[in-house]
Image 1 (cartoon, rainbow, N blue to C red):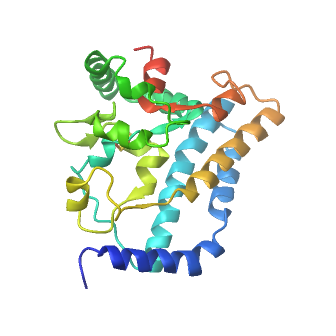
Image 2 (image 1 turned 120 degrees about the vertical axis):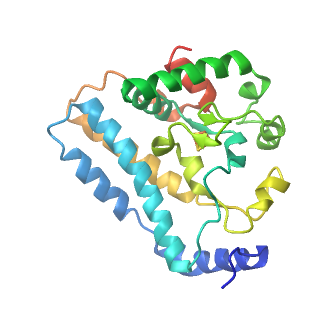
Length: 246
Ligand code: SF4
């Protein structure tokens, strides 16, 4: 068995996914996650939303694993490889808020470490030009951003590890490599990599459904500005800076 998929093999896998697996895709796993969190009557509404966010992120991971198993592929991504942590990570304001809220809930030592790291980060990259590239209107924003090699604020550039790995956003989960990891080292935007972007939509719809149910039931979501927070997107550095007041 080859260890890494060639580009041609990856194309065959994409074809198999498109023909056999994607047409059968449904949001059952996401619906089950919604039901599970909405049953948590022991939690207040903001904590239900926080839990939904975390569980839905995990649902994306497990759905990706199902497709990998179905097509017999395994990512070649490894701990300590962080080329995609120099990509623009764009999330909704809501996700920025929930990620910031999670960081603030970490045990004291971990929280202090991340906040000190972020403070240092924003001293280094304060108002970096990449944070204002217009991703909605500049067709090559991704290339412009990556070519400046500005790391993600949550990347520990000494260890190449993510400081909030368990709550890293969707783009960090859906972008994977199945071919030789050297392609990520050799090219800014390798053609061999694969993105399960379609799960992002299931995930956002599910998160939105949780919010709508909570609001409909008259629950109070004090940290939420609805629908603005789910409609507006920004680069993760801008969102964290704003939410954590850095
Ligand atoms: S959130 Fe974590 S995994 Fe995602 S780009 Fe940043 S450091 Fe990398």
